[in-house]
Image 1: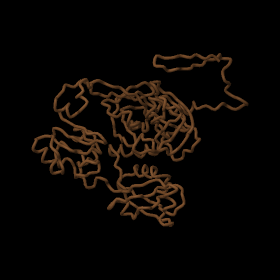
Image 2: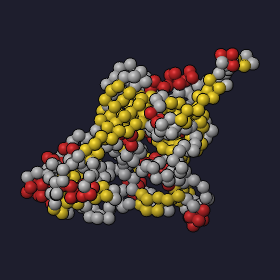
Image 3: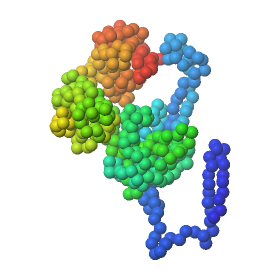
Image 4: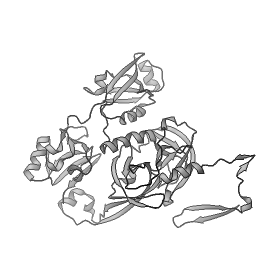
Length: 449
């Protein structure tokens, strides 16, 4: 066997092997054919696409350009440049041209370009995205597509063989294999809701959004992240379970956003000390430490100190497990709970509420806010503000820059403390000129130019 070591300009080391025809591996050993993943991959690889996005980035040449407040009021000229990102995606519906990928692959993209396995290049439409689970759905106008079958990720076991397919470092249609190294990984701080599949199948930059498949060629995970303390792959990769991705995808297709139901509890893991205090055996489950008054949980009879053992027939392993299972359920969904209270097993039934049931349609406040739901003043973000509920993509509110979870502090430079204030201020100004909002831990100014 001959080995050739090639070092590319980017520092990538490629090892190529060659051998004479006479030294080739036999097709049969002891009258048995050698195992190969090739037949399965020939069916699955055509469903994997390359995703390239164009992102327009402000060029902050002046220090004040970094502050949107000064940028608006000082009217400093802006220059823009284009940034590109690469990732992968999976065709999951050949008839409708639906492609599943990670939200972070297409976040802030002004243009999404898809390259199919056969070389066709297409522009994709964003159907919807959910940052909390890092799932996005795209639509492409193409015929003769190959789609992957979505498998049951709950059936995975540690030790099962899996294959990752994607476009790492721009090397299209790269295949790596490994095993499932762990299940239900949480607490990594990668996403809002986590229950990752851990695998040692090599995942690198560019693999994000690509499929993790089982040996039947079924999609069982969406490759998402790696643990790389030294900046390189060390064999610890993470994928979003296919069952979670499918549940989110269905909501994005139906509504363009995820309509999560409100249960209304705070929870924590069952520790040995807490188990002793509650008089229960230490093991799996999630302990309820707070029930929101007038919530779905309160209406179902859930109490502080209850230990949730099962939800809709599935075992609850931890507080994070219960949290992510609830996060996949829509408004109005029936929830069957098995709990342990005072040494007795009880069954409770809840129906998830709409977290925005008291919010009003932005259209009734001002035409520029049409497509959004806005609530009365609250203090949940630490600062009194008007919370923003769902925002329909491409609506007036969306085009003004509002997103679900934003909290409105000021409108047109004026502090607002009620929906009436919001409406009156916009009417007096004659238009929506600027919004000062809280988005996560950041203060952001949205201004029309």
